[in-house]
Length: 536
Ligand SMILES: *Cc1c(COP(=O)(O)O)cnc(C)c1O
Image (cartoon, rainbow, N blue to C red; front, side, top):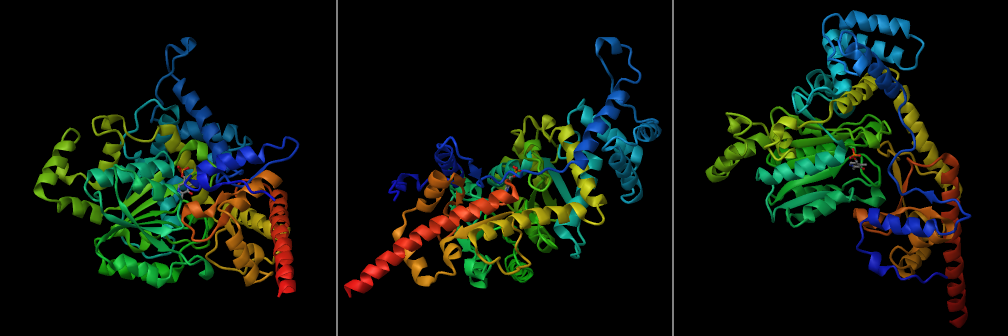
């Protein structure tokens, strides 16, 4: 029996602890490591990537079309005039090349469905992919913003009535969005040291760790999801947001690690709370929303209060691209709160932003976030690199044009098939169908591993194991790496199994390893019980 002392590792973030587990799991050289600790998907969207490379080739032809120093390797800017016709020719003469049909379809879609000028679109895309100008406007390229807005509307608002309009800031992934937002909320006095912020737990660990940093000094209040009720937030927990001391509510929806979306009922309940708390700041990180059925963001219900963060990393298998957006409604409480700050603070902020606008008091919060991302003084070079914006646009168009949702259905089949494989491996019945379950991750806790054995065994097991003991034994003895659910703010010991990054057969094997380990403890439990019975 392994008696490794793991107590000194208890304070590590799950992502740091993972490195320890990987070392153990990799130590037996003749064994395959099964690392289900990573959220990084092992799939990627091919069509919009093909489109990107073909667009790049077309843009190169555009650049080299009429420049005197071609032989020396010098090209020029693409030309707006006639770009439509030249693209048509390119598309027709390369019709069989992967990605070209998609690109030609995208140009028609932008023109016919979105009502944008296809020549302007091609010009923005060609200049963008050639990366020959700073991103202007810095918040986001113009047509790119219009197109990505349609995508965000479709995926985050869906059929929900929403009469407003919103702005987007294209950023280097969801994590950059978090960094920028935390910083600008602090600089603009929306959050001050000592303020109470509520976290919908369990939650992606940076949302726990960032507010605790000394430069933020925020006080955290947990809004705990109920594992026994499909990881939904009980109304009693949500009611904590009614306390005016709570300045902000941070939510990951669908959650990480349970990977469950907030139910429609809870969303409505939250919207009701916000009616009574019109000053409450909400940040919702909806990175996994695109994997859910009929997803609606809290942003759609409470647009005035909500900062929406979305990332392309997971759904398009594009973590290396660093693509994300921040969205704010054009009419929002952030601008209003800034306008209502005490005079001294407003004067201070007006001075801060006076180098970029003659009317700094009118600068919307989202544009302050852009400026702050480059310490204001470097605002003229702010913004996401233009090729990144081009790929973001192509990902968005790919999804918008997919009227039968074939990509989305494939994504769901893929991750749900892996979960079924995991449970098959454990010899456990598949979980009951729950429309809110997304399955990008799944949490295995002791209850789940042992449901069919009985509550007494679960109690005994929880009392007899040390922190992380099961995770360390899985790593060392079976080469299986899972992340500890505890670090994400779960209330019971558990392991997060990422369903994104291994193949179906691997999940069967992981399930079998978990089962084997469980059976070993069960054996021990039965021996002890037998001994106790005899002694009586
Ligand atoms: C994976 C993940 C991210 C990462 O976003 P990037 O776009 O890759 O920076 C953000 N938020 C949550 C909740 C995640 O799980």
